[in-house]
Amino acid sequence: QQQVKQSPQSLIVQKGGIPIINCAYENTAFDYFPWYQQFPGKGPALLIAIRPDVSEKKEGRFTISFNKSAKQFSLHIMDSQPGDSATYFCAASMKGGKSTFGDGTTLTVKP
Amino acid sequence: NAGVTQTPKFRILKIGQSMTLQCAQDMNHNYMYWYRQDPGMGLKLIYYSVGAGITDKGEVPNGYNVSRSTTEDFPLRLELAAPSQTSVYFCASRFGTSRDYEQYFGPGTRLTVT
Image (cartoon, rainbow over all chains, first blue to last red; front, side, top):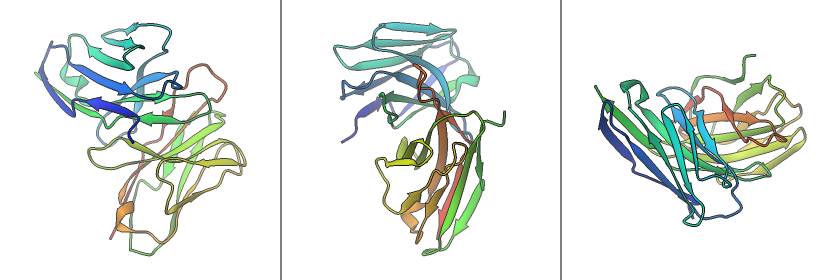
């Protein structure tokens, strides 16, 4: 049973567009929701993260929206650039160490 | 700081062979993790450790073993390699007491079993 479901699997946008990636979780014990960015041949790196006590967090062009009642959260990339082309993973973590990752979204930003 | 380092970067194994994937971190993190990433899939947790001498199973532990004798090192052992273990393996670490659970990942080991 997958605890974190991510969609879409792939996404193509034009430069300047606003791609949106969605995740849904099941376990209400999760208390930390990060997004990781991965470039080909590299390990994932933290992009932005949110706790369930806030509904939105913004860092530069990246925004997380969080809906605790619906158990959903999403990543928005404003003014997307070709350099944002990568695979994005959402995750859900809980105290005690374990994290569960979504299956990833491959984003392509066309010039 | 070197961060999280993994060796080797690439390896080809024959079915039934064994090997150890090495992982080390120099950030004094007490939590360490091993994940596998199959094409088009997310990261699946194999094993994790919350401190030296303490390890626990993740989602997909079968066919693997780990040990954690020091804070810095967390090797992953594959016994009797099978084609289903062909994957990219990532090691990660984080502080265990911080409010932020950010994991720092190594560059990965690409393993092929034929």
